[in-house]
Image (cartoon, rainbow, N blue to C red):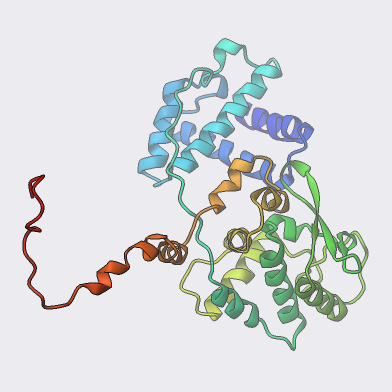
Length: 324
């Protein structure tokens, strides 16, 4: 009972007071319940105030070995547990000395990988897949166009309200992580796709979700992920495509177009520019093009003067210094 009470107290009181999104709170609750269930099975109903650092270390090893979790997933569990116990200390349910993670060792960070992005041709194929003669098809085409055209997250797309879409001024207002809002400009192609969907969908209240399901309800975040995957398979794109991959593609294509990293940071809604700098990578094509532009091409024309098939001496007879 103490686990359930403290988890509820933390998520519904502490996290809500911090203004965290409902999806974030739900994820925290699920992670804490998973830790609780492990302790119940492994240590016979161990209470949250009885947890020690060794229990957390054994749990992380369980996640790594039995559940094949990555290092980033392990770090996520540790961060949530640290925040949980820090909140319990702040709410006077535990003393600082009872916090099992107060001196917890740092988990090694997983190597940062370059984001997987779609090529321009793959994006073109993807946008052409949804049917243009059905409401659902026009809705999905508008979703794909908006995700690639603005780089918004799936959760931001799902929570987008009718009143937050201004096609006259060509902008939308989205609410990102931590409840932070930002206005994003829309280009003509995105406006056209959204306007066409709005026309066939019909008039709705400004407080209703812009993208709706078949039964007229808000299209969920998972629903948006499913639509992207389905159309990527139909487009026969040989990559695991998701809304986040389209976000990566949006940012990477802007970098290649010469857009500044600070502008891209603001469009993506990143709070730290370090999160955006991963998009400053170059493709193999860019590397080849850079090699072609190297100034050595202007200095090495003498190589053309060498005749094929001519036997050359090992060393110029006039050379007297050095050893070959």
